[in-house]
Figure 1 (tube, helix red, strand yellow):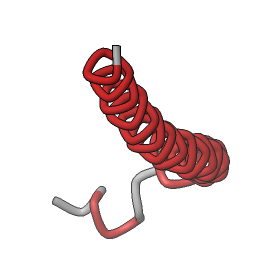
Figure 2 (cartoon, rainbow, N blue to C red):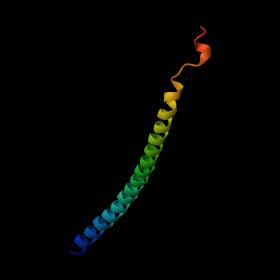
Figure 3 (tube, rainbow, N blue to C red):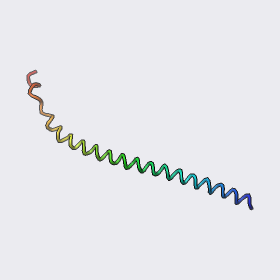
Figure 4 (cartoon, rainbow, N blue to C red):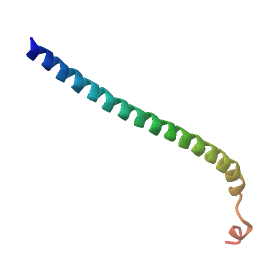
Length: 67
């Protein structure tokens, strides 16, 4: 009976350690997702601003017409 109890205690300790490791990985993944979500938002804003300026840049400069 004592051997069985020891075996179960070892398994519980292993599972607790494993759950802690999984939690750490999950927290890192959530932080990375939040960072990437922020970056995507910034890129969208940047693209929108560039798109507005891009319309102005589509006009050819006067010196290009001389060629």
